[in-house]
Length: 445
Ligand SMILES: [Zn+2]
Image (cartoon, rainbow, N blue to C red; front, side, top):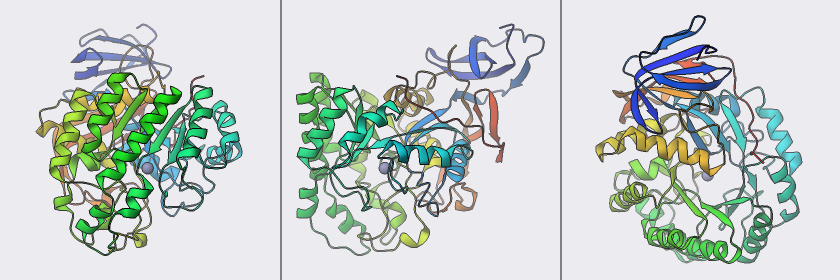
């Protein structure tokens, strides 16, 4: 470690081999070695001893709606990446929709990159979008470095991003499979949604009934069938319905190339606690009952669900009306995702190692970011330093995202992020940020 510039020391470093006292040596933004705790610090290297605070790999959040450019009054790269950094996230992958333009052509991707370039406090990658009419754009986008393609099977909520019917899904998936790409899917079946009672109004129970589990289950079954037929790689976004878990488990056992994510709000909030009119809790698919939540946790524990991502999808406060049918659907969770998941995980007997696996290692694997997701030699020196037993009460005024609406207001959570490090540089500590040091990432060919 003679070339080390920095040594980060803690009694609790989470490595792929487990949690141990260690000194992590860093040079040129990379981890060069994970050494014994009391290893000698070389001359010229700076020692940062964080004591008993836990050092974990920076989280990788592969599901974030930054909305920039075009709907920057909803969010933006500056605010979203600060919120992420404050929450221990060091990489995010931006969703292709809600920005204008959406990321559906190489030109649009370039526009987004130009906007993001000098505002990114953490590393940022991009998903492309698969629309009914852009099959010809998919390969060029893949070659331009997007990490995969998002499609909706039911209306997306914005007119410029139409959904795919089953024929278009087959067409897009065949194209994506032809170059070994990944399709990520919002899986709710539009016919089941249409057939469900659409009451509208402020009652959460009515909203829940309008987005039934069988809409998810049916769409997931159809997606699995297509993936199997084409031997294509697919990923189910924001799984909420526990009824779909047996389907997922069976498909995985059969060798279908399928991965599944869920979100902090499905794991930590329940339908029973959502007050009527409180559309800060609205998302699609919806937050379901506590019995459903127990099964999602079981599925995380047994590997049926692979990973946890925020689906951070804010809007301006005025769009969060008390009518669940028309209010904007999306939960703002970037800054709180680690603490929210950790608070519930510890209650259920899981360790921080599990949280790291779900929110950093597996998400890095999903998008092929081999340089992220673990503390080991050769990877980027991205860290979150966490006081896991300290608590805080969520005060919306202390959040960094643009519109400080949150479903977590007033909750007391475990896990205070003391500092976040990107390629060996401390980018935020105790609420103080450096200038943006994030890079724009492209898929490893
Ligand atoms: Zn989303």
